Picture 1 (cartoon, one colour):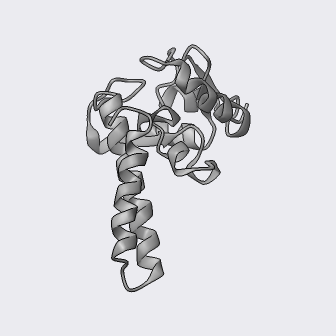
Picture 2 (picture 1 turned 90 degrees about the vertical axis):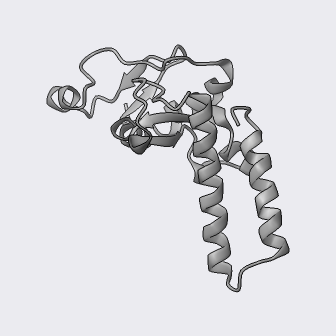
Length: 154
């Protein structure tokens, strides 16, 4: 599952099954497709990051979120949405901060924190010390660059 296209291929196969035997309403079909794709993306990130937060290393699945660098709605294709390098497995609070653009990561994986977070908030959120991704690859770079340019709030 940790290959960039495996989640997309599995998603396409599951959609084909649905299309061959569609439910009685379009609304149900859309919900099933979205949830299956998101579950596959989460599973791919769990596999890729060893079931631990990409930053903290915390391995509590209940508090880990599959976070997109380039948001689902902004991706041009299913393959881009489900690409494991477009995501980071993050603890819930880091996911929320990353999702709304209050943190991002530079080319080396070091955190960049928005000036919108005051010292008290940074301290309360555990951002008072240097945080960084446990590892980063060249395949992550274009997605992180998109996040820095379109989501991050300096």
